[in-house]
Each structure stands twice: as C-alpha cells, then as structure tokens.
Image (cartoon, rainbow, N blue to C red; front, side, top):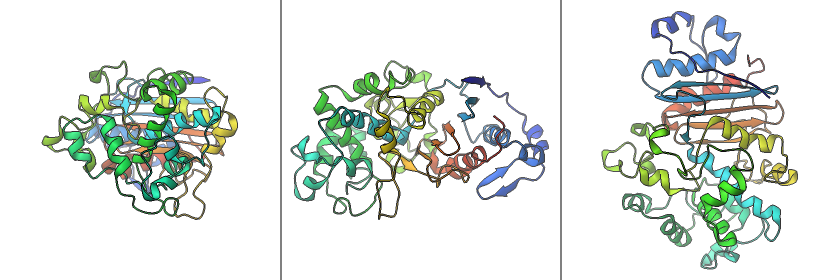
Length: 380
C-alpha cells in the first residue's frame, strides 16, 4: 500500500479567496474554482481549510483511499493524520462487529432473542426483540433514555443506563418500524459482557482493534491522555450531549466522565487510518476478526419492507455519504462531526474526522466533502 500523508499548510484567507473563481454549488458540493474543479480531492482539502481559516472549524483529518493509495491531510489543531478524535456514532458498527464476532464463533445467532442473554429483559414485547432488531434500529427502543441528562449529570455508570434501558417503554412492536436508536447498541454490548465475562472495552481491544492493527483506538479513552485527543466544539453539540451549555461542562463530550464512560453507541476514540482499517476489513475481509461470510452479511440490507435500509450496525448509502457512491456503500456518521464510508463498487473509502458537530458540519463540510471525494475523477 502506498502512502502520501501530508499536513496541509494554512492558507491565508485572501490567498484562498483568490483561488475561488466562482464558488459554484452543484448539489451539495461546493467546487472551489476552475482549477480545483479538475481535482475534486484538492477541492475537498481547500473546502476544509477554508473553514479552519474562518475559525469555524478547529480540527479535522481527511483520509481517502483509491486504487490502493491512501492520501490524508490534517487541518487546524490536528497536527498529524494520526490525531485521535471522539468518533460518536461510528462506534455503533464497531460494537456490532464485537457482537458478530461471537455469532461467528457459534452458540448464538441473529434470530436469538435478547431475553436469552438478559433474562430481566422480558416484559411485554421486549421478549420478542432479537439480536438483529438491536443492530438494525428496529427494536422499538428509544435513541436516548428519557433520563439521559440526569444520568450524565450525576456521572452514572453504564450499568445504570443498562438498568434503565431494560425497563424503558418501547416505541413500537419490534421489527415493524425503523427508528434510530442508541440503546440497542448498549444492550448489544451488555450481551457481549454477559457471554464473555469481559469488560466491553477490553473485549473490543483484544477481539477487534488489536487484530485489525487499530493501535490508536479504544472504546473509552483506554491508554490515551484526554489532553492528547482532539477537543469537540461543544458549543454546537446535540441536545442530548449538553448543547454547549455551561451547565453540561462536567458531562459533555469533552468531560473526563464521558470520554472514559465507553458508551458503546458513541464513546469510541480513533484515528482516520484506524477507521479506514476497520472499513477495509469489510471491503476486503481477511478473517482476522470476522469470516468473509459474516463480514459480507453485515453490509447487506436487513430492513426489507421498511423505509430505511440498514446493515448490521452500518448505515447503507448512498444517502449521507457522497452523491457518487453506489447503493452498495456502507459506513456511518457521528454527531461529533465524523463520517466514514467505503464503496465496494468503486473500491473507494473516505474517513473525515472533524471537531465541528454534525448539526453544523453536515451541510457545511461532511456532505460536500463526501460528494467531492466520491466523484469519478479524484486526484489521489
């Protein structure tokens, strides 16, 4: 594999604007002038750098893989492409992979009911919820618990989140609807702990991250110093993460509490190259973590007849990835301002980690960059 890893030098705003000949918008892509229109990759780099120059974006790393070549650049306070970011919901397909590793070993299947492993999860329709429901957002569980804020304010352990998730009212009968939910991934991780008798972050380190060479990844902070990771710009955070309120500083995305909690729906830390390695294990499965059949199964649509296609833990494209991605593309985004996808048709992958929450960066950076780097002619 060929590497060309460069840290882009900051451009003066007037120099950048001098290259911006027209500011054309095509779809959600902003093509940066006549010259860069010939090189969508360079246009993507310039788009990100422009947001750093204006002070809108603090940190970012973009990695694109095409034709066996990786190119990455770091921006702003991310001095190197090896900078560690809080992934947010890119954590979900990682958690799903942990559970599917156990499926691969035998002894449990996607059709198994959760109550088999969490006996107290038995009231009403809960006893009908299967592993597949948890991993495809069709369980009827809510995204966040009604008590989410109060739990985080008092620094509750994950065990309390589990206790509440086991009892929280379902939104609909399992399997009948799609509703994005984080609590299903919390229970998936709880199942792994009960089956293996291992702490989930330890299980992920030993059974997923280490075999894939993801040596700068952890389900919580792991061995990494909080100060050495990229700060999330919490002034634009999602409501369930404090929305930038001063009152949420001791439990928001940057707090030691949240960074060490290891939330299996959004607490993983990683680098762009490690996330690429994770995606590549599905694009080119080699059996290090999952069998080829299981890896392929995870990136297929399991929500036939429902309004949203989903793999097992994975979102399916092209919506939200890049306008030139195929329907076979898979990946996930994160509310901290992250996006990762791979396309089996084009053999292209993109990992974009930013510090700017998706509420602001989705239309400003994530989607336009995805559109650019998924274009047929990318200068990698």
